[in-house]
Image: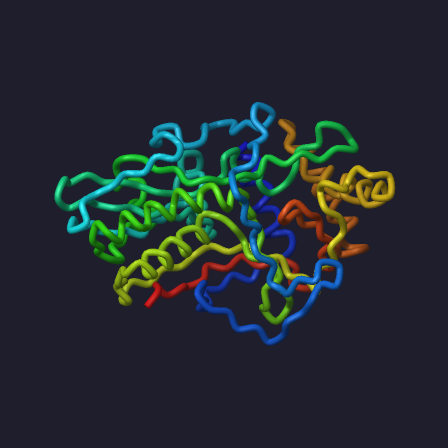
Length: 343
């Protein structure tokens, strides 16, 4: 599945024509040249990730991770380490190429990076790594399965994996291992409580950022990078002071669209009145189904390209609802954006 995910993302990147950049950005403020309201939802853009009172059912055993199970060496679910209030912890920003276990440093050349946070407990010498990623791998979070020709099933949850140790070679060799702050035990304990709460409040992964041609955001991605940015922001809220000399960039894959149109909530998708919409969605997603035969996958992708040249439409699944994206040039951008640490 990792090979198929790599194939899919890189084909999108190259076939649509990517404009790679390292523009400055910030997760703590947004500047929009225009705001819009989607009349069908009564919502102001950008759409926010939906919060849940508890984590929904993951979809297992139908949903499977494939090559590597989620968090195989992690701490048990809903357990967090605690330290003494006056202890000291060093905070590290961690980056490595995605699927490094399979492709080595190759995807670092395309700025396709995975992000995480590391902690060194000074008093004990122990290290902890925290990373937020897909329960069932990236391809499953980006496109649904089609158990039948008229059915869409998503396996798109993400979660925080917490495990002891920091694999220094893994992070430093082809990526980043950079000290960004030193915090006391009180800050860490408060942050640890937030991690557990956040893990059960925002359970769904979203690969895509969606913007208009001028850069205003319709939908934010919800992925490993956005979790790290939120984590740094929350540590700062609890009192952490970050080293502003450290410069960090984050991978962002953006779809470029004029104003999205809400189509249907997932809960209403199979009602008789929505059959035409269901048929449009299944016709779209059939082009992106995993297949052990790469020739079939290539054929399906080119069929989508033919259709795209006619209607320039993409469909997005977000907050258990489907949106139609009227795509505009350059259609997709891969950026590696510098985001300042909070201050």
